[in-house]
Image 1 (cartoon, rainbow, N blue to C red):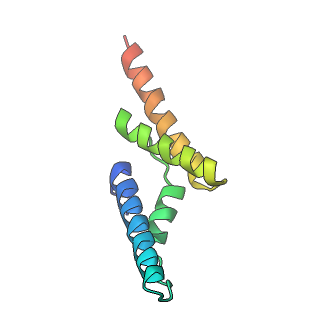
Image 2 (image 1 turned 180 degrees about the vertical axis):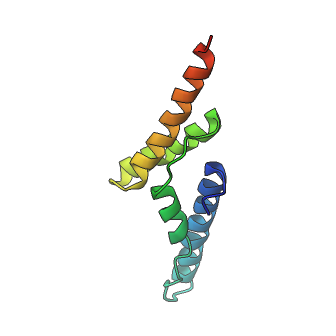
Length: 100
């Protein structure tokens, strides 16, 4: 999973999380037990352990967006990893722009 870009990991995480949520809501509406297996734990772990800078401004924005969403819901290990990814891109971009 770590060979994927941060954007790909974040998109897969959101897709699987929302699919899980939709399946649970549909089961509830049918009066069924909503105990579908959570399939996105490996993606959560990948995000929590992310150690590379974001590769672009949009990717840095996505990382910060997830960190802010997590912060608003409660502290998670994803927050520092995503903040570091966004900061890493900003730092590299600053160095690139100020290089002589």
